[in-house]
Image (tube, rainbow, N blue to C red; front, side, top):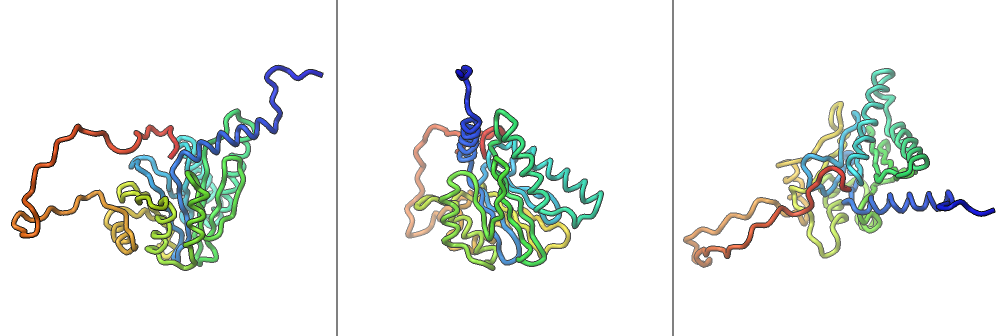
Length: 274
């Protein structure tokens, strides 16, 4: 019996879908999620101020993703609707990270098997407990697989290399400043420069906060924390110029003119991997 023209086996179709999704996810920047003494911290290089890779889902639950923004934003909004409906219908304590992870796994798996194109996304759902033993980190891949991570998780970009550096430096019950140091070291290639402060997206699930545990770390608060690390990221504010009367500094000279340049990085239109 001859095969019809253009036939591909189910195994080949699945392999092609998986390769397509992995390549798209690898083009995004890595995200790190790890436990510290008071909760869970999310750290991601993100040049966009409008498109977030880290968000709140519910009182104790946070969300982080890499890949195509428009695709993981749909997952985030679906998770918020699920949490709100279940919290209102039953009880707020009935909304759990495990339940949300199962919902995402079901949707991702169905799309991967039934759709022509799989989603180019990888997701972490994290829930903070009353004690560190109650913390949970679930990492979900494009095909609906769920991994119950312990201590830390890395996804997107060079995820394997980032996870290796995390494993070498992570330790239990770190302070928030130490956790940020570990995360930034893991996200930085050996010999490379850390992302500037203006291009960092950082948030925590702090078990010591009342009611809503999610908190974004920005501005002066983030600067103070990063100042406690051994190698803080560079700030976008230039250092003060030396005074004109200083004996050890030469008189200021006019810098050579150069043609104007555009801003660093690609323009983010919401469709490229984050």
